[in-house]
Image (cartoon, rainbow, N blue to C red; front, side, top):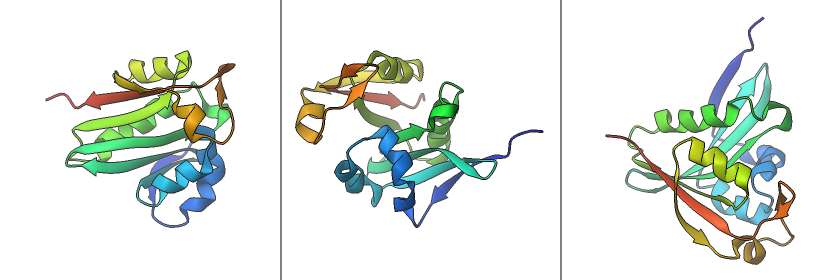
Length: 153
């Protein structure tokens, strides 16, 4: 039996997705800063949400992927990639997609594999903006890596 999948725009009740969003960004105050102004997409499979992402419009043709989170049992199965590709198709005017992420090798490798290029770093971002230490792949995150991907002409 084939799994029933759909990605949908969540227009109300975004707060109920907070536990899943916290997998992608552990600072609730930062999530609150972009959740209301962003589009929340939920990937549902067989009646339950397995992944979410939040995208904000930052200017004409410019969007930022603020948060992407996949439930642990669905990681490394192409869900994050498919959700990111969905974002590209959803916005007809999208020219450049930006994001910021932790300086861990697995996360950096994921975005590079999707064609994102590093455009800068915010030194000590995770030290200054989070109320507790953040760890990924066993290392404490310090810097935020800034990426962008531009739609091919």
